[in-house]
Length: 208
Image 1: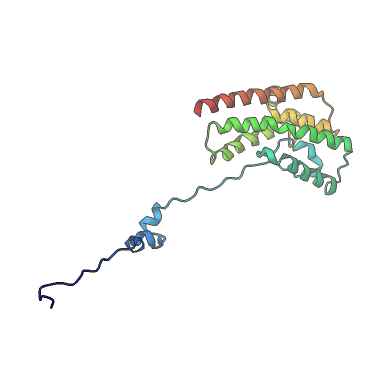
Image 2 (image 1 turned 60 degrees about the vertical axis):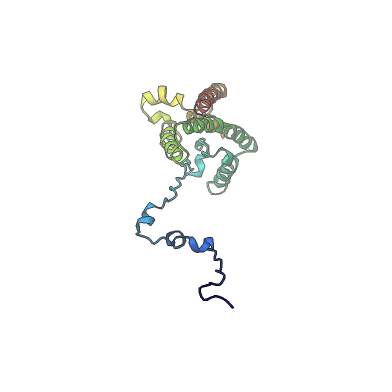
């Protein structure tokens, strides 16, 4: 017989980790609550600005490439299709080849400039800063209207220092709108690319 004071075997109980979770961890956070206010939200994505050919007949004035250098060839091809179909621009095979040979490698100065800008700001702020640089650069380079209508200081000092000015001149020459000596513009673009790439590489090595 079992004694009166004896107890039977005590069952062993285990607690599932699922049951030990606090209500705040398992329940959804209600909007307006203090936990909801502390919940981090992803930052907005800023889309970089790219110059667009509003008038397809001004195809050559879209010399400044999109910030994403990989998209240059399809970007250029779409502009050519718009110019030749909707804008009724007549381009020979030689002009098309020269235009591609100008604008596709012509993205290198702008890639170097984007790399240089990226050494100063984080990726989320870079598109906004690029817009602040590209928009005035396109305006001062004569991409929307001739440089001759701008002040003399822009024509003689500011514009020749901008890579978009030289790429625009080469693109206008490629489609027969203007005749320029290509070598000085090519040398300026190559010098700008090499110098800005060198400075950007030094900054990247310094900041790790």
